[in-house]
Image 1 (cartoon, rainbow, N blue to C red):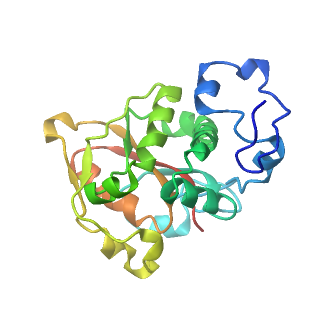
Image 2: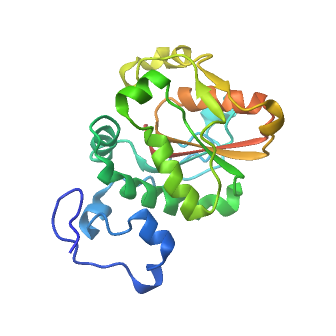
Length: 238
């Protein structure tokens, strides 16, 4: 019998028969018990453009209407608060990879609810880590997430589309007012421009806070000729 990765209690409610297929198995559908899954801070309503929680979902909030964002959509499974905030931190910095199936399953369900509205991207792009950070951590948390989503959604992924050429302080440790400056010119296109001609891509990250990181990467993709840019993330900070 499997145990819940959050409360460690045995999982007594099994996967419904209609969900016992490769997609759900590969995403780890039974990694949380029913009660822990229900207690998570699911993002119910949001601005479809920037992903901020809203009383009612809408295509763009007032802030988005006043800004010239490079990204067109932002989807998140959760609000960035306890216990998701602690789970993501443990996943990124303490090698708690057992949380990955929870994140992939939850984000998969959110994507399935909206993909008919935003369209299916041609390729998934994980937010790259600088080589120094990658060597320290041993893995790119966004790439691990992308690999599961790619298989479940039948969308290819590219790990060499863009690269991070300058190391920066973690965004969560940087004051909000400095985050946009912190990531200016840190991403570059890795593929030749002739091989980067996609109409619609989805950038995948773990957390979107101010949106500075995904905006900086979206700018690079837009300048390469990408017409529609979606951002998919585990959690969106308020």
